[in-house]
Image 1 (cartoon, rainbow, N blue to C red):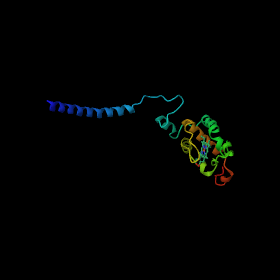
Image 2: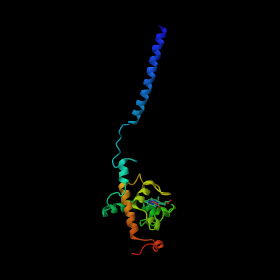
Image 3: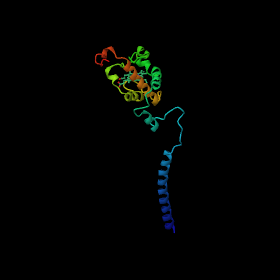
Image 4: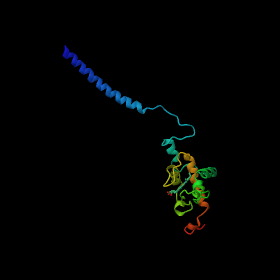
Length: 165
Ligand code: HEC
């Protein structure tokens, strides 16, 4: 009699054990299913598909209004270091921040809008990323404004290499 009870007990315990294993896998699945938290208005969640799509080239259509919007954002976010005309002589630089290269240098003139968008998103060297302050669409607008600035003038130092119009 006693032996039978022990055997039944062992069978129940074994049953419990496999049950515990199953519960563990269910519990870990549940942990992944977090409640849906809506993003605050006006923000784009980092790494989301929407963000990736907004950053994919060629970006929004380039119109004069779009470039004008880029100019406003450039003046607000970039000119403190890069200067209003992109010569790397912004007010922050005059207070000791390492000067960025002039946008009118040969190497920087050749950067694509895509590359400029990527520099705004990820930063580069001593420049911090601006992903949390500049919306993806505005990064394209700024990039095209920078290209407009570059088309307007050539640094005297690199003018010899630049094609004469
Ligand atoms: C706090 C100062 C600062 C601000 C603000 C700033 N930059 Fe920069 N930027 C730098 C510095 C410094 C470098 C040089 C980085 C290096 O090569 O170490 C640089 C480099 C760059 C380059 C050249 C990248 C390359 O591939 O060599 C681009 C393009 C650029 N910045 C665009 C922007 C734009 C657009 C904005 C505005 C959204 C901006 N920067 C705001 C300091 C700044």
